[in-house]
Image 1 (cartoon, one colour):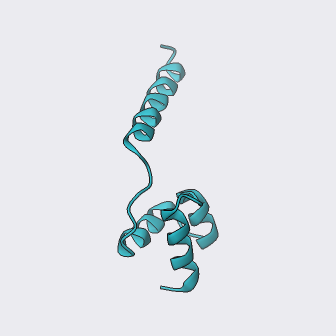
Image 2 (cartoon, rainbow, N blue to C red):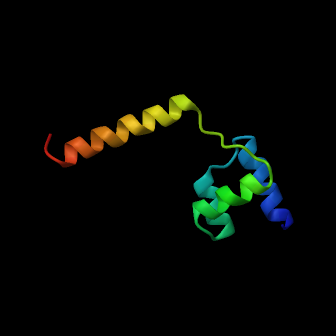
Length: 68
């Protein structure tokens, strides 16, 4: 693991960069960044409230695109 990966992991842990931003800097898919973070012991920084809000938004978008 290089210094850039460790620095981004720490910034992600503190909420200073998003998963997408870290993936862009590292030039890899977000899934690979998640695995890197897990390997470094960094837990996700998405709360249950944020997850529920995202699911609600996805459901609403899906219903709107289906003409419901």
